[in-house]
Length: 466
Image 1 (tube, rainbow, N blue to C red):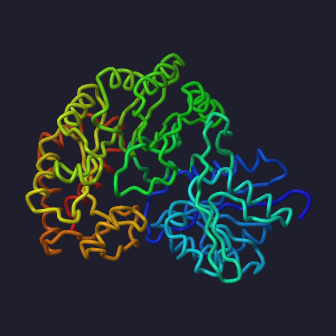
Image 2: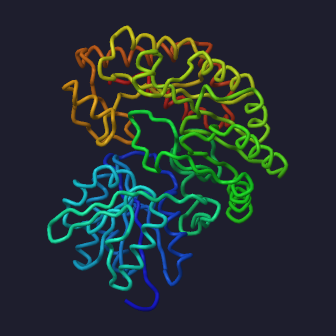
Image 3: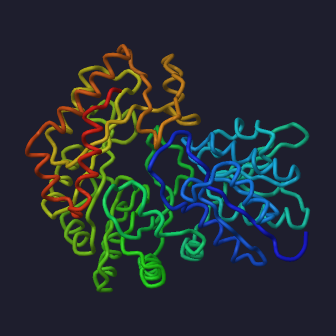
């Protein structure tokens, strides 16, 4: 292969129809690194956002004539991953197809069992994708590429990722120009707040905590961008792409509290009128009032708290060990300073009792949270949670045909399915069937024009049957 290498990166359809679609940050990061490596013409197709069915996707692949195709998927996009790979091979049987993203990184064996997929880039793909691209260009060996899996004469070869990028400031900013940023305002977003052009931000990678339901795809050591580098990205998005709303999607943005506050200080000093949301969940027992004050002045409008359970026993068993009293204080502080608060809880852990489930629901109902999500515990392959569930004889199959896992139901407890479903439903009803809570949502929600849609979401949750 000589001349300009053509690469097509695809974000595929989801397993079930949904109105949730976010900018594909991982693909944009890989695209930027490929470009910096030189002599690469990269394109990104976000299939559902572009409204492309399989036939139209095939037509676009024929038009672009890529040298290789990369497809990144979450687990609830797994069927779309395999459909897109099949379409690529139908276009040209010798077209190299590479899978990446969380699903391929976790379910590597299953993904490579698909003859339409040639390689899997696992975990952090910025460097691995560039090295693989170079090998494909020159016909060189892939043996030394960290974080790569492939088939070799029918035998599965896996080189687990051992090297992670330390200097995140040295990475190029994402290839924002390869997507239609305004198109994403038509769809639901993780934060459920905001109507203007927005973009996700990773200011760190990895998390040092050891929660047993997490895959820790980015390694065990947190790596941080400098506040100045983060501010430069924010300003570039604002000035060059008209972005004024941001979702910070770090695993734990506030782990280094002085750094987090320094980022807020730079945003405040810039004078830009911006909004920030934390849809992923901050560490709720590692916050103070100064963080809330600076955050609100910088434009923070919404903050999610990953609480999971109010059972002290399970907090320890999950290796999360949150100080629940401090979490309650943090939620109250956020509310005090005009920040919308969302709580994430998980119901149905192995050995979890009805009494422990009641503790979690009671904690949520008594809290100052504006909204909650009660998720069913999902034992993804490769996690300590999945191993624990298997030891308890509770390795229930996961149904991934739901948008963003909202409708998944698994039961790893000893309670009957019907009872766990009823507890989950009654917990949702108890939380929202409060006039003062509904009034607080109506009063505090920053975009009043969005209230009809929000109320529709609340009604749907109140009607939840699982």
